[in-house]
Image (cartoon, rainbow, N blue to C red; front, side, top):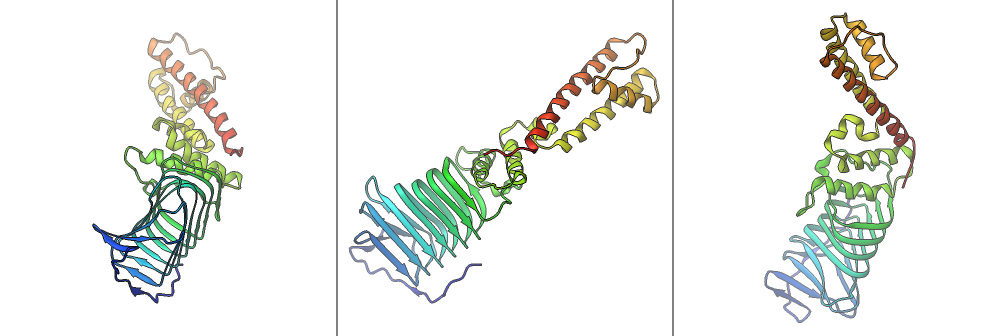
Length: 312
């Protein structure tokens, strides 16, 4: 739950050297490597700027009605941004060249967009509409008591990931957003690769890798449970056996029970009684079921292995 003091006053732009309107943006400059904003409502789109090598932005109990962005004037800049008990409607944008920090504490953000190199991203007790990254290298990423409604990840690389839950596999792909040329499947892959680093149990690990396989495999792999769901494969094996049983019943003029029995023996390549001279359609039918039997048996073995091991 987002908690704020709600004691805020609307800020008027003083049109000073460090706080002025630049086109449609209100540009506020940090002084001495620090900028603190608190108990304030900003009606204009805000651009927080700095020309210091290291700048700390501290925002507490503020509301940005039209978004806020952090801009470093120059290269090799380090941005450390801490936002607590605040509301950002629209986009929160941030880029840091080296060793940056992003901390969101009990805040409500429409869109979080980050890029660059950061030491730490810490999300606590917050509500985020869209968490979007582009070319991020991060040492430590922590999510605790935070709800992220949608992910839009592109090249998000992190050495250590920590979630406060083990329920990390996302099945609903509406939670992923396509960005530029990045498809929803690719975004799902980026997220699940990230989440895999935080899984602590075999079940969580398997669920994440199953969703990762769905994002990276061809759609036809669904008939093999994406090689992670043994019962899914067993179900399809049963369907194949009964379908071939129906075909044998029609082509060999035998009753259904005997046709299914014949299909089971053929599918698992156990062998079967000689059924007289076989026509080419019958031979092709038997051959195709033998091939499917070998393929599905192999897929089942791989699926069992994938469903019982934990990898990072």
